[in-house]
Length: 288
Image (tube, rainbow, N blue to C red; front, side):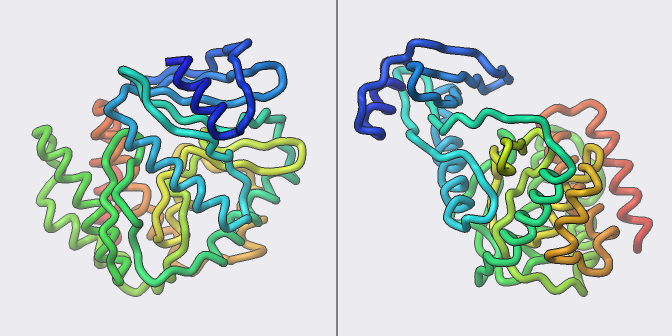
């Protein structure tokens, strides 16, 4: 596998590259991450089983789309590939530093610019991709509330139902979520799609986002997710609001948007997230 990775890097950079240093950075249920170096070049490498290669292809495409907007920094994709039994993605290695209030403010402003300057005609994405390890359908729709209710909420509820976990009538829950978005006008923009504190970082001079689950959707889904597991520092939201203030009604809509992520966690991990899904659904019902 490591020879395949070395060769992929050589091919892409047009220089010799031999792994002299290898540092395990993180482990997950389906993912390993390493820093590789030949003492001149440094790369970040993610490794999965071979059948997950399309996950890396989807992620690489999303990172390239973020980079094209030139608003928020993200890792550069160096190469993707497979070995006999593994798939891998090689990214530029970015050493992170401690965040200051100024960093957080800058990230908020940059994200607002990304949301503001990425108009698109419809909601969806060029292909289905993944939120964590869950398939995320992205068929194009001209109507945001229909897209989100059907391809986000209903999809997750159906996956839970197939595991014999039922939160209620899927059509009824989907209609409630659809109606909750009824009077909200949305212009499609590129969203990160999985924006929580674990998927962002800072260098001395820039803010960095990574591990995207991109699609063209409502910008509020990104802001909502930053609040799901505890809010980011105040300066982030201040920076965002100064550039692109949120519309009235966001506090109610974020319940719908974060319901999707809690459902996904219930599908991936079960346990307490099933209880959280039920609790959040009760809050959503109470709005109507």
